[in-house]
Length: 190
Image 1: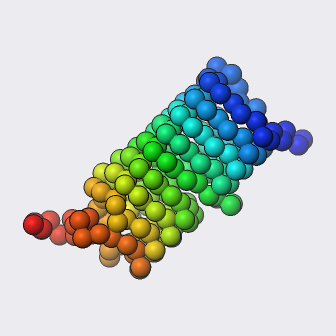
Image 2: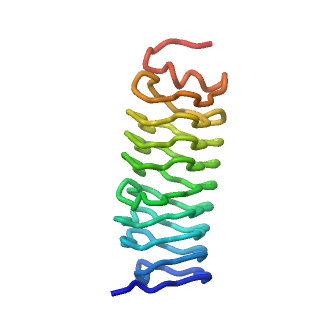
């Protein structure tokens, strides 16, 4: 059975916790002020879509495709991006809260995190090559065997990562945040 194909639609002020989201492929669609909290979005493909001011807390995204998707000012707590469809995965986050989300083992190259809060986010074994953490708060985020080559951390803060456990070749750091690379040594940098 073919999934419905929905394109060029704007969905505004919809509470998907009480109204089922149509299973299908969404292309060039906008979701504005929608509530997806705890909603099962599994096996849906979003292509060139935008989510603005949406609540996606604990949304279920098993095999969900995010292909050139932009999240603006969204609340995305505890989302398991690690179970998404990684084929053509491309996401940009602008001014979002992603606390307690997981990118475990996800190939998320060139992902842009702009002015985001990423407390306790799991990036273990993820491939974040050429990603950007611009003005992001990474307090408690886990980087363990993470591919961080060419990642830009220059304006990120509150991160701690071990250069011996992560690949950081050509990653960018500022003088102000280089202490995040040395935190495991428990030294005082003044």
